[in-house]
Length: 465
Image 1 (cartoon, rainbow, N blue to C red):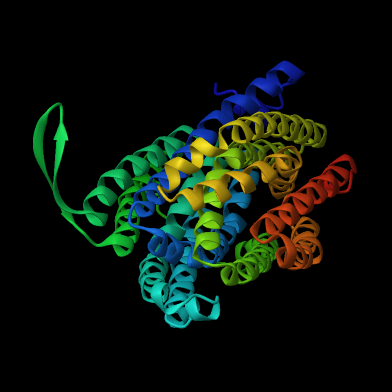
Image 2: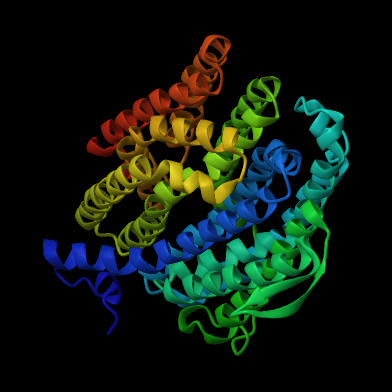
């Protein structure tokens, strides 16, 4: 019997068993997050070698892409949480029905979102304050990624469904594979054909020399291959969710859609509002110059290494809390909430210390431009102080999602970033430049972590039905 099945069977679990279960589920999820972060590091490092303008082109639209990616991911959560509840309640057939409907809904939503993205791709860089030198490249990069949103939405759905069933290993393994493919494809797509020296011998390395466009195409191709594999393992191999040998309707039903909307709409709106604030931050940074735009983008990528454990543990928290909620074990729901948040705060505190120490070396990997390296290292060290409280907000949010409690946490998230971070960033940027923007970010993340901990220690969230 898998350990997670003990939740469904009503077995009594002591603290060490609960902690071990949280760690075992978190590790594959962290590996998946790590592979994604490494992929971002590789992309940034490769494009960084092309120069400050190309780096700034990607940095200019990156927050807008996060908006589209996050909205699609939040949409699929409305279905994956329902699956976790049904599996926790031993209703595998009901879980399969939700999966079928989730596939259809995700394709439709992904297509509609892609059309919106393509429609705004041309004027977007100018809206964000980019200069003419980088706008064309930024538009190309953005179009490639938003065109692939239907595929990426299915990727989010498939990974989330397997995680809801307690299967963290397959999604994490496939994400590692995606990272490897991304390295290979980007190496070919970004750089031109050239001679490289390996062990004293000259080797011809083929390449397309597409630069920024190549970075987008290489990553999207890796995502397409990974999505096909995700769907194969989900629909053919996942015992609780195998829909190939068990036929059923793919028609979207009112109860499932209504529940999905109840869960995902607050998350979708929240993510849109938060990313809207991040886009506004980009507009605050843009007038500071190309160096500031590039340093900000590279530092955001570098800092993601710190919060990678938090999101991995948050995914595990959603699964453990969701299945405990589905099994109608409220005490276990709260215990897993506290255990996973504590685990996340410990892990991200450790990562924050490492980031503070090695910030200069990390930025040297991102860019060969000295000014970008220096400024990026300075702002990374500012952010490192906020990592423990950032962890509290990330993992607690995953806990709340597990019971379908999304409205109040969504309000807490976007209220914090709009009321505190944005005004403070604008004010501090006028006198301190990019450093002021990141000081504002650190202050807001600390505040957000505190209010999430206050909510966690209340009992209202665990009483959500």
